[in-house]
Length: 204
Length: 204
DNA sequence: TCACGGCCTGTCCACTGGTCCAATGGAGCC
DNA sequence: GGCTCCATTGGACCAGTGGACAGGCCGTGA
Image (cartoon, rainbow over all chains, first blue to last red):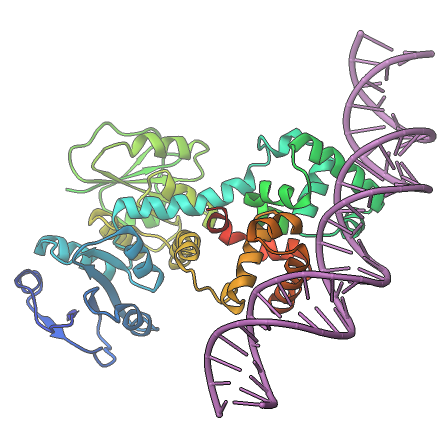
């Protein structure tokens, strides 16, 4: 049988929680290790909910759902990052709570679609930059200049860039002059700042 | 009743798909609008799976799960970004497929834990940095050093930093030496790279 | 063939960046 | 009063940077 623990500062159940799960248990501290499947509902009204979440989710068969009186995207992300499998409104209807329980007990994640969209977007935005070599800034440079620009923006000195590209330090300077001219920057620092979104790219 | 459509190039079912859902239907083109709940399983062996996913997921009561013969995180992110509610291995066991179906039909997302972790990490990394003013890196510096560090990381020359902070260029150098020492970086470029997450902060 | 552009290299020079050594004044602590 | 930490500045010195000017090699296209 699946147990539903509700961890709140007041250690009592809201009527709708009881309506959702007949066997709901109000608690004020983490329950003992439970062999059976269980859902641990943690309220964000608990000041130390983050810490509790972090320790409670460690290698257990317990699914944790964070419930908030006023859900925000930032808070949701925190909850998920800390190991929660779900994040929802504390005043969700009993039917909704049961949905959430079904999802997390079956290995899924329950988050708002907007939150999910945001999480995904942030992830892909990062790598799309990496994948996208034909940027307006970099495409103005020749292939060799691009290599020099990335090396320098990575923090290498002229000598080091020369070594990695197997050319003379003088040549690096020549390319740099062209780069500064084309990108309208005065020095390597401004170049690095202009190319900062490509930081991950340059490092790899 | 829940319908399960399997969209593949060959338009035939694998045995395990049939084992998972008695009413599974093999298709080669998008089905007509379905009023009932339905799960649309799209195989990545379909060359145009991205496009199909994008148009198929538009405002329907159909949950889309992308199945891949060789799942990767990048592909998973693409799928989720394009509107899929789940992403899993095409050769998952029937029991697993049923789990996935339960989750997505109840409004959840089914993604690998690693994938989820990555998505979350990418999102929170950016903003936690901005929100967190007392970072281990910057808090190792004195107040004055911090100001110099941010100015320099912003791309200012020593002379300019001196002017904005209303001190001598010589003093800027002194602070910089201390900064390089404390943060264990060799020059202003490395400093800028180390502080690059603070770019937004420094500019403002 | 000649012109043009990308790529590579060289020398000379002025400026910038970074370090070493050294010093002063102020704030806080035992 | 000593003592420590911080901010400030100075001089000297050398490595790193960037510009000016000049040349060579090679491929494409008029």
